[in-house]
Image 1 (cartoon, rainbow, N blue to C red):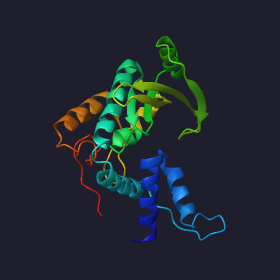
Image 2: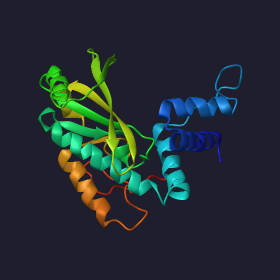
Image 3: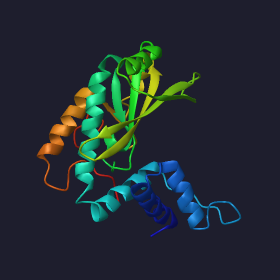
Image 4: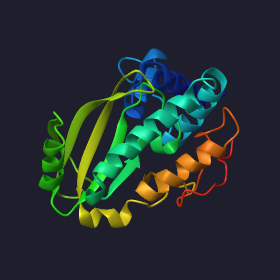
Length: 223
């Protein structure tokens, strides 16, 4: 196994076991291997796709008995919130959309708003106590991030929801696929289809199938 794949496997373990995001997991894995650039050797870090491949393998080996149910619980919680926020064009992103989420994962919802303030008002009307921060956007303008916790009956613990408020025009590029033809996020209708597909999947396989940009099965990545 080359060094990139070794780092990807180490990063995958950190994501699955400690709930780290991809960037932090890559950095920690490199530091643990002594190739993080802080007095050690420099190494080319694995790509997101390499880390995701390693994460899927890790989950299939070590969490096949628990991960599918945890993923479904997270997707169902996302569905409920997307229905509540339907007026703001919510899209599920991150691990819950890509099929690699566990109970340690946060839910990432991208909202494409005519008026971002209206999304905040919707949360206030729902009685949600949230924290707000500003993040750099992909364009010139920063975006708002709203963070709150919501209890999951199925998981028996709270789940963190992260709502990123985008301008409505940004929705045009929201479903652009990755290099392998897989979507980075899906809207309410796509999430409903994915939940229906998971319900029909063989035990232990829900959520981990590779899918294309439309939510249909895609071509598995080369190994």
